[in-house]
Amino acid sequence: RDAVIAAATVPPIHFLDTHDTEPFLSRARRDKSALKLAATLQFAVSGIPLVNYGNEVGRTGGRWPTNRGDMPWGAAQDKRLLEFYKRLIYARRFDQNLRHAKSTISALSRDLLMVLRGETIILINRGRRREVAKVAVANAKSWVDLLTEEKLAAKNLTVPPRTARILVRAE
Image (cartoon, rainbow, N blue to C red; front, side, top):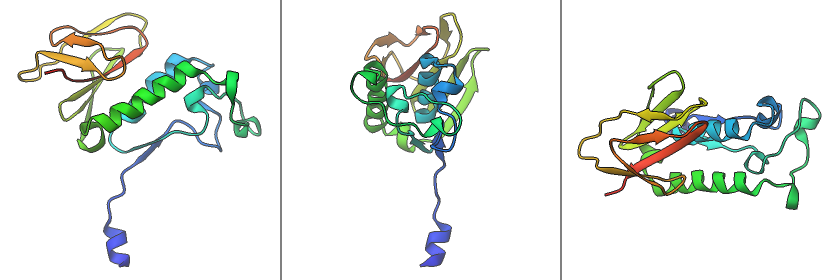
């Protein structure tokens, strides 16, 4: 039994912060677009995304002891950010590539990162300008962004500034 446990493959666990570190939003100077980009990458790569309590609703804090602050409730929660996290979770549940396929990461430009998971394309634009990804996938005519439900033509994979897309075939 111990040999079976020792031989088991444990996927990596990805987290942006923990209860022992300064919250991500605090380190990112409360830039919620930075949190969304980081969370998209966290959910896009191979492994298990671990969301520390409060990231999904915009919890801030600082160094010890405020890094262990209370969970914000009610009006203190950022409902838009929570909806974004729900979309990330939906994407992982909906698309088996995001759970099982190997991830390949490449930089398409200075600001545009691409993660391929099977036939699923994740595009992350950290820049301040719109980017266009030139990605060739056989027989792909159009894509649906699981984060926005927007439909895109295969030849025009645009990514607005400071946003990400999780794209699956539309047809």
